[in-house]
Length: 126
Image 1 (cartoon, one colour):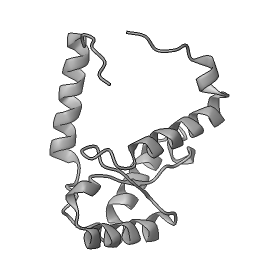
Image 2: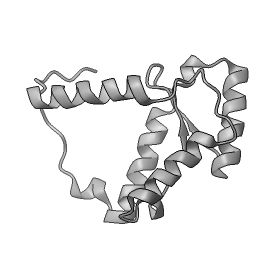
Image 3: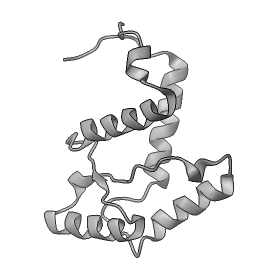
Image 4: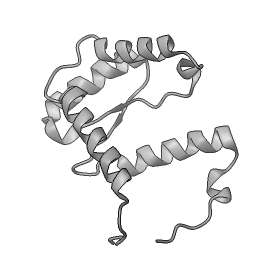
């Protein structure tokens, strides 16, 4: 199913900046997650930023799963699980693996914080 609609120019600009940031700043999946270092860095940054961000519900996910071999994926999941003290979701934007489950988890968290968001939201139409 494809949705045909025009993306506004300002939205395209934001999307381009986000893609560039992801490309430049996100750690490639091929690099090893060493002792939860990156996970701990993110937690520290959230705590430093304040605004109770570190108190929010946390969904832990390992992305770019498609770029790893089965053995690498198993190793990375185990490392992230040790660091986060919970089993991470495994997702891939390329293969779409785990994406529906991640979206469901996000909606569940949002529903818990804001009542049932799905009941409050009108059906989407282009």
